[in-house]
Amino acid sequence: MEKKQIIALLNEDFVRELEASMIYTQNSFLMDECDPSRVTEAIAVDEMRHMWWLADLITKRGGKPTMEHRELDFGEENLQSQLKRQIKLESDGIKTYTHQIEIIDDEEVVGVLKHILDEEKRHRKEFRERLEGIGK
Image (cartoon, rainbow, N blue to C red; front, side, top):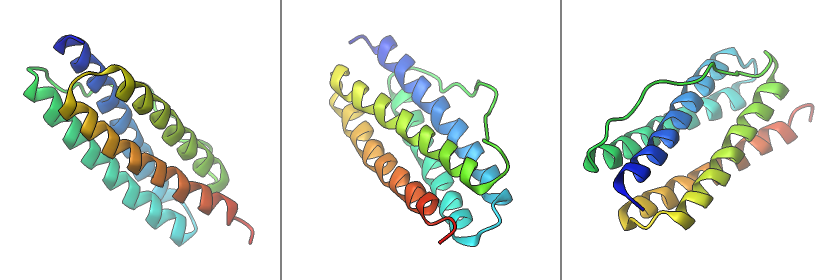
């Protein structure tokens, strides 16, 4: 795979992590229940760290990280909706990273993507546990 193609994929990842970090940050402020709020806040920080790693990969390959993102969908302003939206974002990321790991032939990039993938799976699990705990 050419460097330009890898940079383009990494920039898509960078934007997805940017969007997730903004959504999770806002949702953590709006969540009434403390535990889901703190977990969401901590995961927002993880997503920002992923952005750092992706930006490093992009710039090492001669690219520039893009900050252009789509209109953000925060979910409705209730805990259940917010957690469902966050689970979907993590699931989408898991699917994307899994595919990219299969098609990218750059060892450093694949190593970083595998690490991010592991964290995204953990994030989804954390959000699912909080969603299942609502009303208990």
